[in-house]
Length: 75
Length: 399
Image (cartoon, rainbow over all chains, first blue to last red; front, top):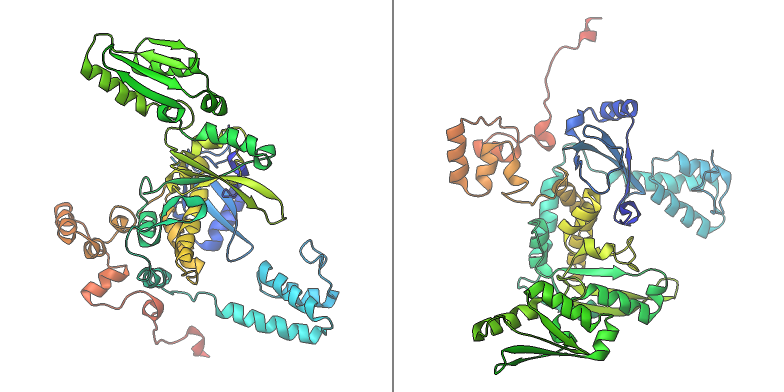
């Protein structure tokens, strides 16, 4: 099988630790469910990710060097 | 701390590094500042401070203000150049003589998130020796391009004996690495007939002599894919120069089967792409799909000389389309149809249906959005419209 994470279109996906997540949500003053979503079946998802986890995505941005975004894993 | 990985390689003094690193600039702009200062040679820390301050002011100035209607601005910024795009389904023989839908039809196709594009195509990059040796590259071509019977040999129908006779071309078989036995087997599997294979000729016919069945068999025979991927009708091989001066072979395909191609030996699974955003989503995930939407819309505009559309607008569109983890279209079946407000939905398309359904279900409109408030004639909650000012006594006034 092909390693999806090696593709240049796929940014780095990592599961975010719960305590760091709290800081992130506080900073933006939002709930977990306000985050953009990512499907549980998504090919780029790390193996250990489960529904309800928040994934940290580090993109190579066109407008700045690196953009960090978060997505909530949903069914 | 000043000697971080980023600042290495620039011939500027430590003082200047401190000044630049302390600014609010993003990394890319800091690098540009370093490059400029370095190219200038002798720069005092005071002059550097002036430069950095000027850049910083400009940078902060260009940031989006709170309550700025970015969506509306994006819509206009993409819509206006959209009027200058070619309107007809204009096919353009660009790279490697492959027809690709261009202009407005392509842009509409992208934002509508059509399941399959009008002209699907892939750009297949190869790795290692497959990219440098023509023979090796051709091996991959034959694994991708669908080989139909007419490409492998001649088909003739003998009506007197009720037989279909295929005389295969030996050279073509060798080139495409398929044997006459394999061809015969594939025919047997697909058509459910007994074949007689001798050398490069394969012969078969219907069980009962019937003219209709015979013609039917020939029809079905033409549709069988003997080698390669069914959906890919043509592959064009091109030698292109890399940035470092070396050359590599790149394959362009008419038709796409992204998932299948990625697992073929010799294909570079890190660069190969296709123009079907749904295929990218299925095989590489939602983030790659977002990236592909930006790339495709940007290229479509750039192809028509409209590359001065700021990429932020296209990024916003892509973000909205991929927000739910799946690709959603812009429009009443996608994003606009998912709005909370009844009036906003009704104002967009099929007004009566929305109002009727809302009435049946007893929906309530909170009048939070822009469209609803325009309809009822209230100030919209954007820009200064969202700021409430109240006169009042300050609790500190007491003393």
